[in-house]
Structures are given as structure tokens and as C-alpha cells.
Image (cartoon, rainbow, N blue to C red):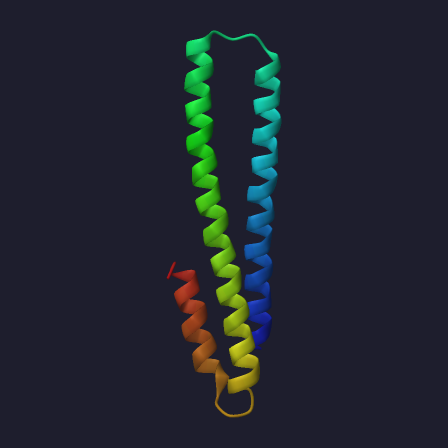
Length: 104
């Protein structure tokens, strides 16, 4: 029961990670299109700074998602190996689910 929730959670995190990677690819395509178009140097510089800022934000976002995936895998592994058959897993699943849904 609890493992299925964590598997769904991991799938959801991986989907968000893939979406962010796809978004990054679209941004790179946009950069290539803009390189081919003629624009004034000041505008190009401003766009480049904005894209660098966005790139930095996306890198941080990807790192955060990778951390979430790693944590979810560890939690699922722990629950499968350590708690299965020893404890009533239901309250623990409820607490972990509640924390996840409340953003913690």
C-alpha cells in the first residue's frame, strides 16, 4: 500500500524532471533561433543575461527534483525492507503522504 504511493510519487517527480528538461531544450532552440536573427547588441546582451538567469534557476530546479527522487527512493526502500511485516505501516504512510501534500 505504502510502496505504491511512493512509486506514484517517484513517477510524478520524474515526470516533472522530464518536463523541466524538455523546457530547457525548448529554451536552447529559442536561443539558436535568436542567434540567427539580427538584433541590436544591447537587446542581445539583455536577452543573454535573462537566459543565463533562467538557466541558473533551471539547474537549481533540476537539482531539487533529483534530491526529491533520491529521497523518495530511499524512503520506499526503507519502508519495503525495514517496516514491512514489523509495524503497522498505515500511520507512517499517512504521515509521509500528509507531509508531501502539505509541501514539506
